[in-house]
View 1 (cartoon, rainbow, N blue to C red):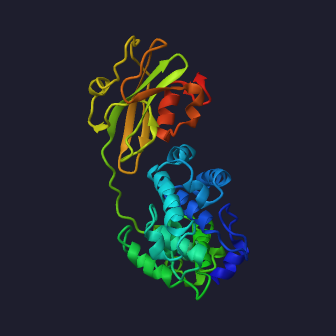
View 2 (cartoon, protein in one colour; view 1 turned 180 degrees about the horizontal axis):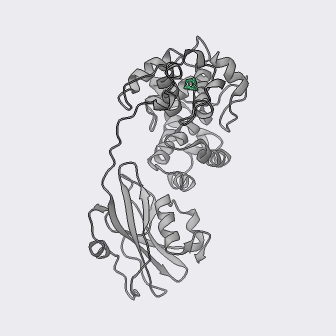
Length: 349
Ligand code: SF4
């Protein structure tokens, strides 16, 4: 029933093989990494861009990490880009450029956790396994009216999802459930009358579909505050590279203070970089806000100029504003730069 529905209604996505075509493990892997915590709509253009630049895992393995980070800029969760590159290198070095075809082999690669390994094994190698994403969680929790809240319910949902696998076409079963969740069994107002599983859906019988999946109350971290310092030297901007390890590792940023809960403006402002000939710091009206997985952040933005010829402080560098778009700038920094009235196309507004 589910597969018959899928054969008629499958979504056309750039990374999917056409009906009857064998799936390409490289495309499946690339899309699965990009889709972690990111929507199909946001991933589409990035996927096409990556594939055009690096059409094979071998070509990506031979690229520099900086190039991969630059191409990834704007997609968020940057550790994925570093792992993507490390994984391509490992596949070329340890497997002769061919992805291993088992979950175990895939999980041994950088950046591939249990979910991604199951997805690649099922979709690219037709292994009898079910990868459970957010869409599938919703469909399964409704079908079986799973009372336990997420995330505790994950193992139970995984078990129940596995019961929906047919004898063959494991990858299609997973993709069918993903499509069902994305197009019919939506978070609000699911279109149950169009659902191929409506006869057997426990939540539909009870009439409380939208109450599933049950969720434990969210714990969000305390608001952190800080300041960002936008210094220009003629048509250049002062930047630095964040440490490889940690949040936004290896990405480009303008200097900032520490980001701390309860930090007041004056303390953040004292951490401004020291440069010779610096004009007075001007505080821009308002602030930049950004929400990371574990905490929200609010940055005050200060701007200043220095004379041409001023040297960058240790660990920092000048980049022409006209080439800023080539830097691996995370979204937070794009917001900061825009808040300082600098456009990435090159120039001050
Ligand atoms: S019947 Fe409705 S709630 Fe149940 S799986 Fe189908 S779309 Fe979702």
